[in-house]
Length: 471
Image 1: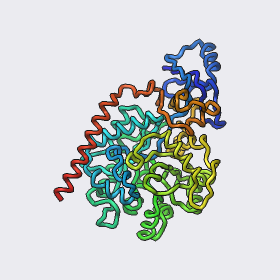
Image 2: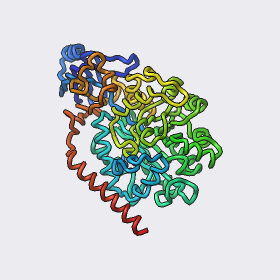
Image 3: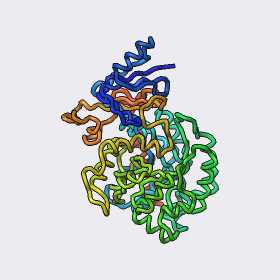
Image 4: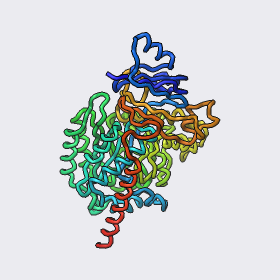
């Protein structure tokens, strides 16, 4: 049994039921759970009364402590192709068609290295739990490759086994070369569940199943995937949905329905389902999301950089939709800064969305921070993360707020995390283990990783160019 005490924080943001923010706060962790939360004086008195000394103390002076941030949607492999397409202002379908042939050149090592780099960048921004959506598996790549990276770094991981089966020859968007046979997809889904999925409380690894989108898989695969997932406790369902107007038109043309009613007809709503984006639901569909307890992951930067639109997050929140936050693919955001994504969510809702008047009070800093913590936990179906309370997972982040970015923000230091320029984590604890110390990931040679990653990225581009030439 080991005890870790983090003390003397300027403010401790608990995200508990009362949403307490504790001045001069402290958290005592025992093994991988939170044991006590309170002021530093209260916890010190308790330790002395019990005759205990923690195994380690971390001084959080000059810092704000928050629960670990939760990233609910990502494509880690896309770190290899940042700025391609986004630099030119391409919209989603054109952007995807530009990148599919490049991604088709990946192999297992490229997936592993890109996941390692993307997860490191997310962790440095404050993420302690990450859900990823890997939906193409060329040249022997497997979900196992990014699971390996996550285990090495010590992040809490929700990888989803994605899939594409509806190629261009069948009326889908992706080229046939990056699609898989549906029997093979389902067989590998069964394999990764059996080999990796851990539904227990405080689990560090849970598998989800994630057909990519309505325009890249068949109705049969959607139904069969849902049936398979629901035979295994804790295996959740995930897909992209209602991301663009083009997608709405595609579904209406091909299926005679808008995206959400189409997926509901296939059994794809419920408290075990979450959708990425949901930029273009109508009012009735927002009600459907709330009534079915289906989750939504908001990805503001990606929606902006691909010109997809502004999701009606304010309305979804007000009507009780379970809502979390995602950075989305590193090539449709070009960043893995999750605290910065929370800031972007706040700002974008203040701009407003079509049909609603914009207002500066439309979304607060604390609401945005809640999306990135409790909201993400709810979307992933977890009641053991997202807040700092006794019995919850020992996942927390320290952000320094005594630097130049926060000078003058002492009147509301918590809001300043979102309104001021995003800073990286100073310390991070995941599952009771210190994984970031004084701004650096423990045991990681980051410059060497960056060099290795960039070599993989260049190799990928060269392979894609050679493939075009030979054709």
